[in-house]
Image 1 (cartoon, rainbow, N blue to C red):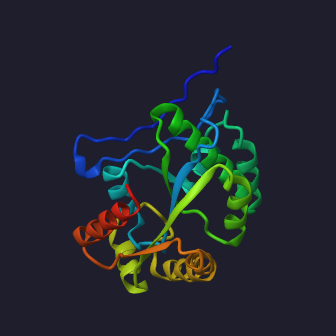
Image 2: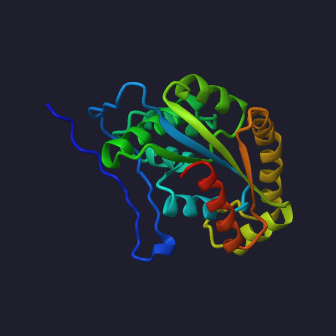
Length: 231
């Protein structure tokens, strides 16, 4: 019996300025084959809340043949998809107030990349919101190291003041977009993510985008970076 085709949530508005490709969570098992020795190309995008990761992701997706995968969105969709292999376990962790294991996030990212290849033969993936801490990083290397090539870790550099100003000025729908909570989230980012950035910097895998600049200037930096990487 042939497994059913997966449904992809492909958001591609008519306006080229907002053209995004985004994959929904795979909810069925399906035959997957990839040529021996082939690995997915991955770029991580890291930055604090309000740093402009979305702007950077949008430009890379529009102009450089990448699919954007948000770790947080994958978890939320899997939690709300009863026939997802991970639904019950994610719901259990959320009910107990415990952290969803990094292995589950890696599994969702693995499925999403396989889905992307199945549907569009895309080999390039932009992973947003992961890894967030040392446990995430080590789990990625164990679970995904043999399946992927980490091409670059893109860091959106932005001051705390600008991050807070942006978050407070946007209609994100997040109940935690208030100044006090934002300061805590920024501090958490520094404590957990900066050691990861330092780890990858020691391996010459980090490129920084000055995200304090205008959108046009950020776009220019992004295009220069991706061109230098061969995309």
